[in-house]
Amino acid sequence: MNELLDLFRQAGALLRGHFILRSGLHSREFFQCSLLLQYAKTAEYICGLLAERLLPFGCQTVVSPALGGILVGHETARHLNSRHIFVEKGRDGELVLRRGFTVSPGEKIAIVEDVVTQGGRVRQTSDIVQSLGGIIVAIASIVDRSGNATPDFGCPFIRLVRLEIETFETHNLPPDLKALPAIHPGGYS
Image 1: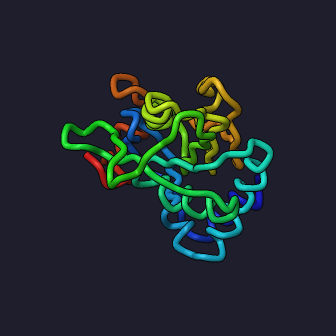
Image 2: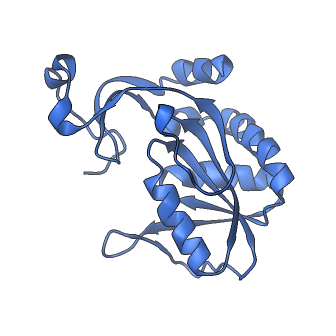
Image 3: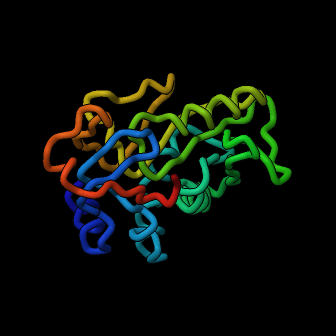
């Protein structure tokens, strides 16, 4: 775990400040996996570690939520010699499977994401896959920042780094965060 955190630090991918996460929670720290994975050899190494841990589950396809999970999912699938597809926002903002991607009934699926806090996008992705008859054999992420609130996905949850990082509701911000401008580091609003 320390080695992976060192890689985040070296890449400038472990940010400090006042961040509003996709979940709506606020945090002092943000893992910008895009900065880490911009280096192909680093992406190959990290996703290779995920693939090693997913290998026993016999997944046929890796599915990722866009945008953050696409690179992680694709590189992990390459190591597994499996197919990779992704879900993305539709017109109404909800995740959908598009671009001609399909899931066959009984197909063994691993969902791969970059960072999990509450697991909302993973659950949405899982719901889509299961509605098409796919079987979720495992969930995997580079970082699990859920702390003591680890989501129950109903299947094994593999992660390379598990951290307890404080998050705060908007109405319950500590003074140091109130004093800093809040940013949406993932590029969404």
